[in-house]
Image (cartoon, rainbow, N blue to C red; front, top):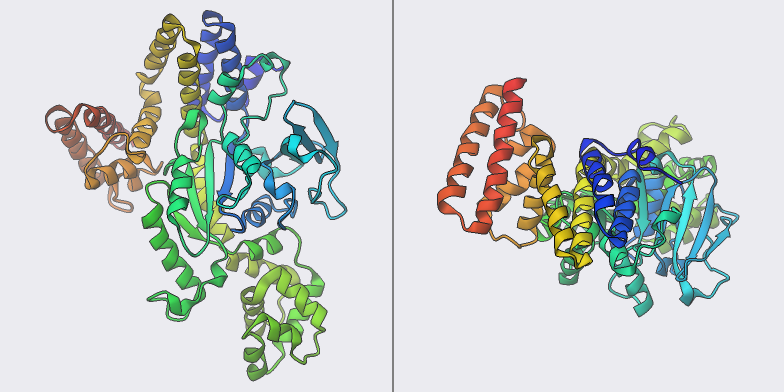
Length: 516
């Protein structure tokens, strides 16, 4: 059995440790049901950050999951498994576990290609979700959750997605007495990577707003949600003003427009080519592929331009490279990736297969997505997990029905949040209130709250990145004073609550800068 001390050794940081200590301290003082919930919170706190990949059906979610993990393991063709929630997490032995609604488990091997089997020899209607364990370094820090596509789901898939892995029962026997109400209070992924394609629809916004991006139904926001514009290579440059015929520029401009539509639900929208990223990162690009591309690079310009007109022409045109080989390249790279590879080989004919793979990976945009994941999720995992855990603790207390227990938990949380080192949690709470619309703020002030609470970088928080230190110091103190005045004289009671938090944030930034 895992003890609280063992768990705390694997916590994301000091904020998570403070919440864990609160749970441990309160366990003997609350009901057995609430205590069981606290044990589940402790388990979640000590686990890697859980990031759900969500989006519409056929948006390329599973392809992107494979690219992020660096292994082609998630099925990408529509089938049984794509209708299930699948959790990819670190394990010392590669295996697939089918989890049934009654808690039973069935262990399966990966198929001959190293992927989750496309079909399951089980009663599908009784399956809750799939757990995939991989000896993969990425998964030591992130648990990646592949969800069914939104928008065209059967009722059973909708139910599974709405549970968002709340059905995943912990291994610890000590949490087996956790009832459904308490389990729901601690269910949910802690962060969301939302996948869109060329058009953001109204129901994308609604789905993202309703998505349980953190425990206890905390909504998605710039602290814990990023969107990617997938299949960027399919965007017609002529359809985007200012693209100047460049596909990637068109995708970047479109992503900027989509960011305006989706914010403040997401921190950013980034273009990516999931198929190209998956092929380049998961070992799908081979020496044989590089050799075939080198042959294509030797074609004359007129022939080559004609072959790039469409996929049909590319595979049927009379050429020394066999049609089957060209079809394989299309399946791995699509026309855009093939064109990028040939252009690179014409510029540097001596490129090795490895060097060409790296150029294709660069062209996919995956590096930028990973860097943003690091900046928004991994670097702030401590705050994200601690905030989600506190929301769960509050929900568990509310569900207990014992007024004395509720007050005891409330008082303990207030003591924790009063500490200066826990102010980051107050700021995350204020950010969530503003982005969810629970507290209405003037647009300019809402944007300032987003800026201060949406970054861990002081320059970005102040909107003065790259400016001299003395300017940052003066501006932080000025804004601290302004927000204190607003809280006292110009704000509604709800706005005043947020304003006091922002004032404190600016003051702590000022202290930090003075200390430096």
